[in-house]
Amino acid sequence: MKRTRTIQKKKQTPKPGRSIEKAKPGRTTVYIIGDGPIVAEYVSLCSSHGFSTVFDFNTPPETVPSFDSGLVRKSAQIPRDAAFALELTNVDLERKRRNIEMLDRVLPATTAIASSSVTIAATEQASWIKHKYRLVGCCALPTLGQRPLIEIAPTVFSPAGTVQVVQRFFQSLGKEIELVQDRVGMVFPRILCGIINEAAFALQDEIASPRDIDTAMQLGASWPVGPIVMADRIGLEQVYAVLAALHNDLGEDRYRVAPLLKQMAVSGTWWHRTLALSEERQPL
Amino acid sequence: MVKHLGIVGAGTMGAGIAQLAALAGIEVSLYDINGTVLRQALERIKTGLKIGVEKGGLSENQTTEAFARVHPRTRLGELNHSEIVVEAVIEELRIKKDLFKHLEADTKPTTILASTTSSISITAIASATRHPENVVGLHFLNSPTSARLVEIVQAKQTSPESVQRSIDFTTQLHKIAVLVQDSPGFIVNRMVQPFYGEAIRILGERVADAGQIDRILRVLGGFDRGPFESMDAVGLDLCLSVTQSMHDQTFGEPRYRPHPIQKQMVESGMLGQKSGSGFYKHHENE
Image (cartoon, rainbow over the protein chains, first blue to last red):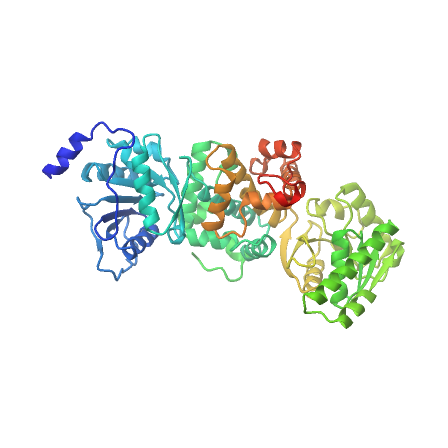
């Protein structure tokens, strides 16, 4: 405790290029908090790469996943020795702010925080905390944790040192890095959610059935899956959060959310007329 | 089952559909106003069938028989036996309307009149006929011989029976049909709008460069090609004209608003693969 305080005092005036503690498998504790499915993905990923992993959910999912690794522990307390923190909340931004403020208070000043900046810019997040230099944005949406690439968004406060630590951390999880500008929606979520929103407008206007939309895009454009399956995989709550954030941030009508999508996101189910259009659609 | 098919317009699309149908055992009357185009189409079909033999799957016999089923026609009246007539002429509403009016006079009252348009309202084309319930859109994707999908477009006036007959016809051609209500872009061209449009905006706002965006879409999204690679392959002029047409047809829906970058690229002559450069340099063409 005493040591932490000394370090914090010493590093109150961050300089560009300051050295943030490097996260290393085998002797580093990683703390992960956020929305259920993404947290579960990163817990598996970090523990399978040798990190001692402590995690918590914003809201416990109905069935808490079990991780059969001795390196994993669920705890409501942020471990004070954590050398790397992942904040993966996209939906409840008030909760996100509380999480980040808490992380900044509890963690040593040398601990970097990678925070999902899909629905709120990382720079804005950094402005909430005292040790602004320690936060870097990253792209976290359900299922993307399993992919071998991650978008990283440095903030206006991020010194090269912090960015490097965050890059190395994700590289140690087997990911390629794409450094992008710190903007709401980043790259992939903005395009993906735009596609899903377009599909929701088409469904709402009863232009085609969900199944035909997916078939058309797979066969007609060689997409890996159609927009309806994409939405199912990511989860409509997350998709809605990204679209609402884009609309709010860019203020253009182009980004208004299809009312059907909003209804589906808040109700967790498909709208009755959509259901009628599709013979075999199950509620999400 | 369709036994006689009429095709109007012997360009790439018309010839491709003729080849498909002939292979499916359908007698095809292929019409074009221009005799040279018609001769070229027959050559193209012959070559297409030969490739089918080389790539395997087709025997010499099958292709000879198929080729014998394609009958070049120079008078519209010769399409009168057709159960379905497919139109594949220039994308201009006035010309299509005029053609459909003539086709209706020259064919049986039960003949399905189908347009392969990708951007013109089927409802508007149907309005030129006395039996608009027989008019339908059959949007074959490029190229008709290799793409597996056909979008069946139901105009405001199209009858359910015509839709069903169109679905049966595409099944006969070994294609997979999806049904879409007549609306700008149908399904495929509509859904690719955010894929291209947001990517261009992200580039325009300097969030990431084209190479990065493509890599992200390939690796994170599992797409075969990123948006810029796709646009370069399709042609930037074509992408812009589709977007522009959708924007016009929806009276300015902002989701389909073209981006100045697109216009600038087209103005500069950087049209993608076909011009040697687009968002990328295509060295083989230089």
